[in-house]
Amino acid sequence: MAGMLALAEPMMSGLGGDTMVLVWSAQDQRVFGLNGSGMAPSGASLARLGSVPLMPEHGAASVTIPGALDGWCALLERFGSRSLQELWEPVITAAREGYPVGESIAGFWAVGAALVGQSASSELREVFLPHGSAPQPGQLMRLPQLADTLEHVAREGRQGFYEGPVAEAIATTISAGGVPTTRAAVAAQQHRSAWVEPLSVGFRGRDVLGMPPNSQGVVALHALGILDGLPLAAMDEAERLHHEIEAIRLGFELAIDVVGEPTPAMLEQLRQALSPDGLAAARSRITAQARPATRPQGGNSGDTSYVCAVDGEGNAVSLMTSISGLFGSGLVAGNTGVLLNNRAAQFSSQPGHPNALAPGRRPRHSILPAMVLREGLPEFVMGVIGGNAHPQGLTQILVNALDLGMNPQQAVDAPRFKLIMQSGAVHIDPQFNPAVGHELVARGHQLGDSYGFIGFKGGAQMVRLHRDATGRCTSLEAGVDHRLDGVALGF
Amino acid sequence: MVEPLKRKGQRHQNANSLPKRHAAMANPSFLDRRSPVFAGRAMATSSSPLVTRVGLRVLERGGQCR
Image (cartoon, rainbow over all chains, first blue to last red):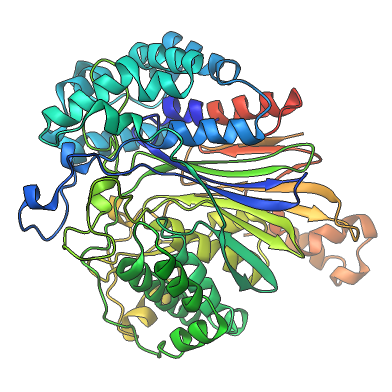
């Protein structure tokens, strides 16, 4: 599924990006986290960038060594039942023969082409903007270079990507953009994916699991932990949204100030923030009025792909993969058809910050697959794409499901808000009653445009596992956001 | 949003007096929204029909999910 995403949503995800995964193993009866995010290249240097308030959004300085392929290999080795060659056969065929572009993906294609603008390399234009423009909805796209790369990597495994001609193309492309990167620095990403203990927080009698740093998963967990102490179901809509916005704002402040390449001290700080005392202290900071706090470094970019799968044996996977912004860095690695990410844009450019750029470090990362356990067993497998919309969507959708009693489809379709940390603006879906917007303004919130791209509320997927009294799964119930092209299918 | 059904219901005095097979009419919220997808054993979701299909095929052949 992750391979097909590289084709269906190439401006969102693919071999040039990262992956993070939560796996429920039925055999082990527990959740494993997998962090397949890449590190800054060997030549990455704050000194070379000079004194800049923010990291560059595009170009070689925005690239981290892609971690996705190493992550998927690690996942297959531990839990897989098929080879990469078998799994990618339909992907390679579709890449050669052509596949129809979905409607919202065609929209993101066009928006992404405009956003990446002059930063788009000639290789990017040739591969992804044939005849100078993005494909129309339903238009057939062919990506033969990517097909060749996928075929090579499927045959050779990790080494087919991190060594040899693909690695050479990655190193050469990043180096040519001004960040000296050796082939050894690319090869060093092999076996770097880490199996990690998920972070968790209690919400409505469940355990919500998310990724630890360098993921900013703590944003959603902190917000949900704060909201767990508030009677949201008894509030009117504006009051409820105000509390959700404020809880999410506190979550972002925590993540932006603390999260980066993980250290024991960082993990301890986050565990404290997720403890009952830490959550109570944060909860007490919420008043009837909006906190004016903003974080200019709370980068919003990040467009991502998510899949969820539950198999007949009760295993469940919540998988995210992303090249960060639309069309990533704007660079395609040589003739591989692999779009390189711009995840390094999420580093801090301030020396001494826990998230400061340095070779070998991984940045604060927007992707956060989630899972919710009830009495120790998966009840929800879920994720939301769209940069900083991930934790905001997760929080709102779980409130929709558990406080407002919505089914998964209602929960993902319901109107949402999105807080922009750089400006403090709150974008709310136009389907909300206008009185809700007026009430939020009265509480001191600055409302943003309801329709623009920056206000994109993300695309969500949620699968609920229903169980009988013995804990056996009796049925699965899925919802897929109307905001993207997706569908759920099962048997 | 459900005017015709409300009028139908009104002919029967109140919802409780409806025959049992019409009980769902008393709360017909399913009429104006997309339904969730139910499955008995396995499920694949994604943001693209192409991707969901390849996931489903692996699941149908008895593979573990990824």
